[in-house]
Length: 198
Image (cartoon, rainbow, N blue to C red; front, side, top):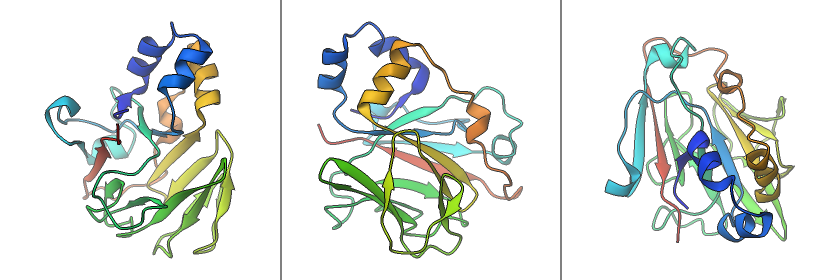
């Protein structure tokens, strides 16, 4: 499953039964903020790149859309086969190209039927539901958990089951709750939403 705007995902998946939905949505998803002011069609490129303007980062752009990004490895991204990596370097599975984000900032890992998140000894830290994480220590993720990276961006972790309930109810989260508290007014941020494995 490729990254998709949340509203399109809801429109496309709302008619499905729970069984059909869960057969199609096999991975947990990250709900990612909608700072986008440009980008490419994911059908035309192996990844979707959006450049976030300073105005969007400061919350003054009203036209953004939340994106859903599958929590899974990107083919050929890196050698960390058991981790879904997040960071500034282009070989991460989710790339956040901003100087506040470390090259290898955090990672998610599946352990049995559960998922964890760990800070990868990042410079500006990772928070889980408002609590700063110590480096290299895995913390369990519950569906609905908010992962905050370097005070730049909040990602919401959603299990397929909970995502189904949101889609069924047509729930559209308020996108401004995912905006950063503060942003460097002189810096743009680029996010690469990777295409997932088939």
